[in-house]
Length: 424
Image 1 (cartoon, one colour):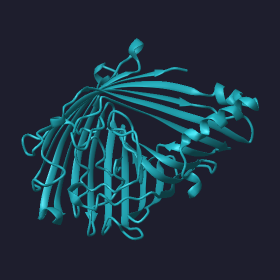
Image 2 (cartoon, rainbow, N blue to C red; image 1 turned 90 degrees about the horizontal axis):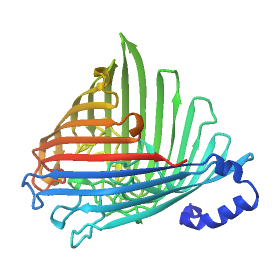
Image 3 (cartoon, one colour; image 1 turned 180 degrees about the vertical axis):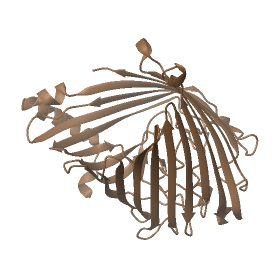
Image 4 (cartoon, rainbow, N blue to C red; image 1 turned 90 degrees about the vertical axis):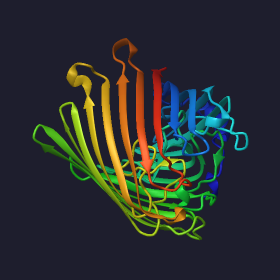
């Protein structure tokens, strides 16, 4: 594992020299792609006077430049990817910072005027197997890099992906650092600990994972992953997706099961959780109807990497993740694509989730409840303005936890405007 403890920037100069010097730049350059995304983001979380800080409210402008190379010719191909990110403060103040859009000083609570970072990823490919080293983004059930703020969250490490076996995709990785979405520094990894579920200060510098997905039939895919955050927790994930034609529509069944326990010296404390969730969505014409249920068992909440998304069936841009100990939650969803009314690109979604039977001994409560109502309206411009999208999200979250809870009653609004331009 020691060989992966590096800074990707060290690889840049010798790699480019070798590509140009050996005359292998043809595939490397010709198959390259570059895109620039400009993101304007407004975030407003109103705590309605329930906490000393009445609101978290900021506005920022971001830019994400992604350059993806091709591979040099030959049995073994080499390439290099780069991502440059910039965030600029448009509006903030110490009494309402902390939205996750901008870094802020721990003492003064003042947000940075701007922040930027560069991520480099060296890669090599044999047939349909690719190894990446450096800045890594994983979008897996056991490690899902968060895209929900101004700039995306990334990892540092190595990631091997293979689709050489028909219908099977394999994923193996080693991560040693995380870069949060409102940070420019790589840091040791911790476990998410809202409501004091675990010891938030416990750190680890090794996260390993392995697993894959198998397309058993055209309608059924099976998934399994294993992950271990050294000395904190270990996790098994199994799930499936099944599509069934039903009348004039299609029914999707999405089942996800997580089993977690302590790893090594268990620096974050007891970990004991089993989480089963199922989501049914029925799409017919321009409409989608959804219903889901999730149940947690065991002595603790379900752990996941701090700064990432847990990717349970309650996933989304919600204030809470409904992962408290013993919690049972149900949800209902409705979505409408207004292309059915002659307005292509415009979509509306509403969702309601309610959790009950919550045991929060750290807050002195049992039989607690929480709920969230979520509305979203998005529009992707057409024609000459293609590439511009606007998304408006509003949610209302309520619970009967104590005032010391991390998740607190709030009304939240998010507005982001994205413009993605393909450079070549």
